[in-house]
Amino acid sequence: MLVLTFQVGTERLALDTRRIEAVVPRVPLRTLAGCPPWLAGVFVYHGTIVPVVDLHRLVGAGECPPHLSSRIVVVADPAAGEGRLVGLLAAQVDNLQEAKGSTSIGLTAPGRPDLGPVLADGTSVLRLVDLERLLPESARQLLAATQESPA
Image (cartoon, rainbow, N blue to C red; front, side):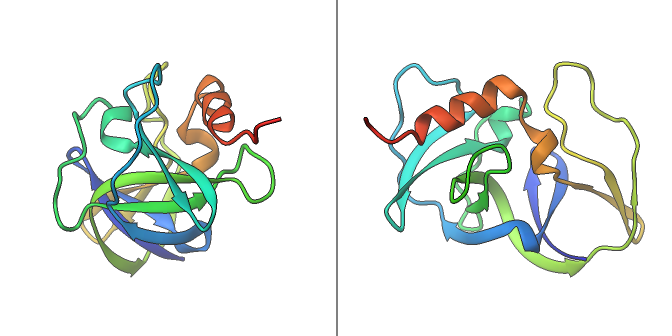
């Protein structure tokens, strides 16, 4: 499987490229009052409001650093309806590589974001982001609310 790798805190993460709609530069985001700190803001992508999750804040690693390699990875929101997108803000978005097998090891503490299973990458380790497991249901509902059309 071909994956895009990036950094969140001290961990290298990978995302299956088949899940990716686009990778865009770190554009200015509009913050929304009353949202949790892990919601970096929203931006308009091809006429659609896209909420952006700061993966660093989500996992408790501070704010995403403002590196030139920091990007917003736009993916289809697996919990929302057709055409709903969500952005994942990450640092050092820099590499496409083949990822071989995965190992399902429960490395996530209760109440913490589940970054997904572990992949062996030669002598190092990658976490394969599983979009269905990344956010708790309450967070998914909040993201869906940011994309509601006005009545």
